[in-house]
Every structure is written in C-alpha cells, then in structure tokens.
Image 1 (cartoon, rainbow, N blue to C red):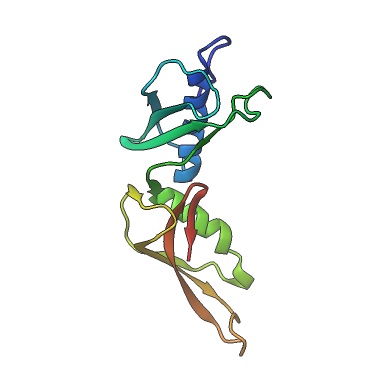
Image 2 (tube, rainbow, N blue to C red):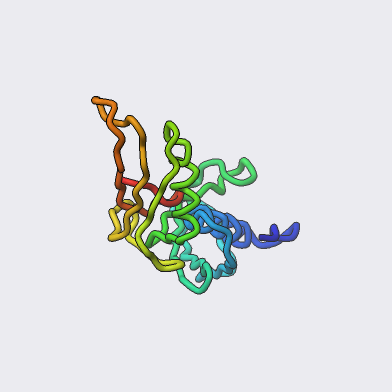
Length: 161
C-alpha cells in the first residue's frame, strides 16, 4: 500500500491506516482500496467520517470518530474506528492455525473445515467453520488429543474459541 504523498489531505492518512487494519484482520495480503464520505475533515474531538475499505471485492465499513487526543503527528488528530463486520480468509485462517499449532509438542497434523476463500463474519463471534489440530500428550492423563476450535473474526485476525 503506497503511503499518501506529502501534503495529502488528512483523510488520505486515515484511509491508508484503515486499509492496513483491514489486511491485518484478513490475516492475508490482498488488493484493497478505500473511500470516505468526506474528502476533508478537521480532526477535532467528536468529528466523524465513514470510510469503506474494499478488500478483494468485499466491503468493510469503518465509522471513524476523532478523539482530539494525540494521534498521527502527535497533535490532536487521534481517532477511534471499529469495523462494521469481521473479514476472514481461508489463507489467513490456515496461516494462523499453522503458526500457532504446528509444533504443539510434536504435533502438526491439522485440519480445517472447507471454507470460502474470503467471507464476512460478525466480530468476536464463533463462525460455523472449525479447525482441528493434534496435540500429543495434551490431557492430564498424558493421552493424545484432537483439539477443535471454532473460527472467530477479530480486528487482529482469525482466532479460535
């Protein structure tokens, strides 16, 4: 994602940050673009804009509220933004599970449900998709176990519960 040019309107910096946050949520690189309902905004306390980030064709709306606290340039341009929906990718889910469970005490056998390449999901709620991994000697009796987690969309990427 190219950074905004020097002297670009402040909204361009917000769009860049929201694009990065959307990619982090997907946990996989992808083509993004962003638009906002205003081309300019004065980042004063309680000012608002609504931005939409498109990731691989799916739209995520980000309502933005400026806090008046220090932000980008150490000035009063801080803001809060929470996406309207979660965004998950098959590649992101597989990367997360493999990165977190591949060396589970000698384990590494993992399986995930068949899932779409990319989809929207409510934030912080279990989806209908699951991943399972093998954990040798995981129980209190030292027995091997298959552990299954439901996939959850968070702002920081996929998680299991």
